[in-house]
Length: 389
Image 1: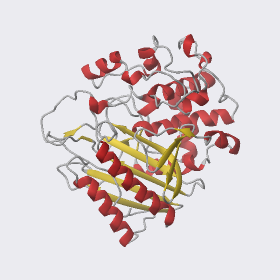
Image 2: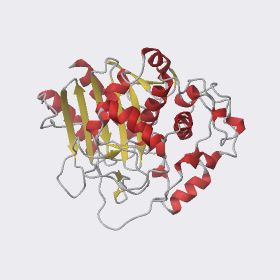
Image 3: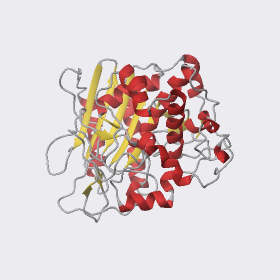
Image 4: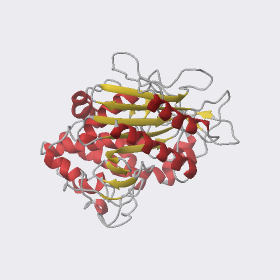
């Protein structure tokens, strides 16, 4: 999720802070089938090292490139400051707005089953304002809904500043903006909003009578064989985990891995996974193997719009998926950023290849435009490595 937590006043804690930038370098050992690529992996590792070595860069980075059963892992930096432990494909991390791909997967599978339609509207949720009633599931999924973003609401910001570990009632996050009208006519323009995927999850629950968490298990975790992916409520992360940091030149670096709870982002940004699990999910999601051909065609009806933060190359928005057109070809996926983490997860249309690139600091256009430009260039290099080898 792209809750811009880093722009909030963050509590300062004693002790040494930790920085991590996750990006590729090294080969994954063990049963996953690692395969070193010699000089190319060295070049990719050097690109990650450039990010880690920046004054404003993250201390650790990891990329996982998957081609069928072959997996390559490239790393730079450390998983935790003050240690020599490198980032690992089995370390847990916050997916931030890449979580929106999971809520998209749930909704589109329900569309396939006839339990939801892309033309269903928020009128199905009487708890939401009548003024929002004409917004469709399709518009929520491609961020053309006009819903005001609850994560920017002054009362929400005030509460999370006062108690970063506050446990919100995730089903009532939209209450923070329920007194507001739509920001524009549904379908008339693109605007990224964290409210959209919260509403998607609420529609999925209303259509099935099951909790969103149960739907994730039934519709995503089991079909894709994900065992290290979850949607927690609190602020703790399962171990081992990649430590995420607040990095600001001239100020002490802080470990913010567990600064915020996940209930305030829920279906829009609360997911926790590992690079290995994230890559397995993205291979299937980007390739469309979780949904029918007809639904996949609807998902890939793209409009102008970038993910948050923008991904590599030219960005276009589909239904809970983005098209990234790079110099080496097209991949589909999602990005995300939150306190301590920035994520990219993409895959190829044939479901065979996927790339996840994770760094352990929050990077976005407003707070770190130069670093984001550098990161996007590195991401494109990794996409090219994925597509050309």
